[in-house]
Image 1 (cartoon, rainbow, N blue to C red):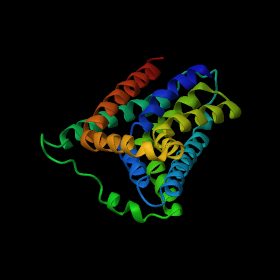
Image 2: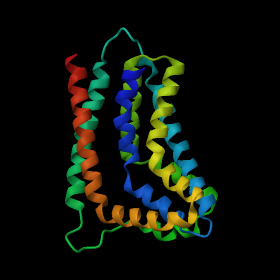
Image 3: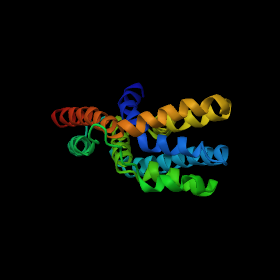
Length: 224
C-alpha cells in the first residue's frame, strides 16, 4: 500500500500544479457569488477527477495480480506518457511570453463572473476530468495501482488519496476564502498575478519532472 501511494503522490502533485484551474477558482472567488461558485467548482473538480480515476481503475483491474511482477503493458504506458509529457514541455517552453509581453489567458475566463453554481461545478469537472494532462496522469496513477495488485478496498483508498492531493490547490483558495474572506482577497490576487505571468514556465517545469518520472518508471517496468 505504501509503495503504491508513493508512486501516486508525484502524479497527484502534477495534477494539483495546474495554474489555469487555480486562476479560475481565484477569479470565481472575486465574483458576487464567490462562496457558492467557488465551492461548486471545487466539488466539480473533485468529482471529475474521481470519476475518471474510477473508470480507468476498473478498466485496468485485470492487471492486478500481485504475483505477476511489473506489467510490460504498464511499463509501455508509462514510457509513452513520459515521452508525451516531454513533448508538451517543449511546446510550453516555446509558448512562453517574451520579456515584457502580457501572457495570453483563455477567453472563457472573461465570463467567469456570469457562471451559476451548477455551471461552475460542471466547469470544474470538465477541467479536471477532460484535461489531457490530468487524464494522462490519472491513467498513469491507475496503472500504478493495478501494477501493485492492492485489491478493491486499498485501490479505492489509494485513488482517494490521489484525488485529494490532486485537488489541494483548488480546495486551498476556497478554504482560505471561506475562513477569512476579507484578508484572502489580497493574497489570492497576488497568487493569480504570479501564476498568470509564469503559467508556461511552471507547466514546462512540472511536465519535465513528470516526464522524467514516467520514463524512468517505464524503463524500470520493461526491464523488470
